[in-house]
Amino acid sequence: MTRPEPARRSWLEVRWRQLRNPPPPILRAVLANLAVAAVGGALLLVYDRLEPTADLAPLVALFVAVVVLAGSALTYLWVELPTGASGVRRRSAWAAMLGLLASLPIAYLVLVVALELLRPLL
Image (cartoon, rainbow, N blue to C red; front, top):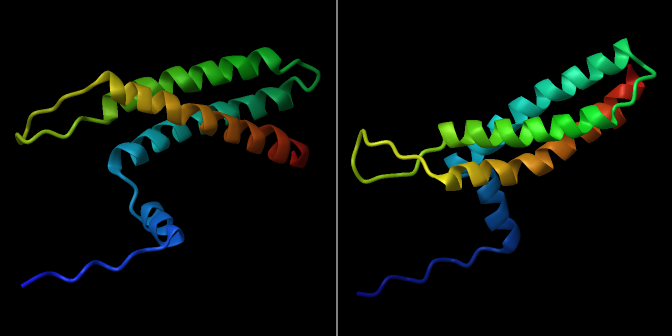
């Protein structure tokens, strides 16, 4: 007896399913970077309110560097490689690379939201 072929899903159905069920390492990397970037963006806004004439360019560069480094470190600590043995935990440099690659667009998006959308409202 042969099994019937599974139904082919459209590109949109596949992406919608991926959005609803993200892989845990990806979700953890995004959340770690988002937490660091949100705190840094809030600090940038507070500094901008306290010193309105200050140049933010060096602080923005520092913000991106901190988000990249802290996001990579947190992802390295939080994302573990799956193993067949229960109770065995392994970490890899690939987890840090995942955090690095997730940190760049998240840092950019937080900067856009903080400096371009929220700053004029305050």
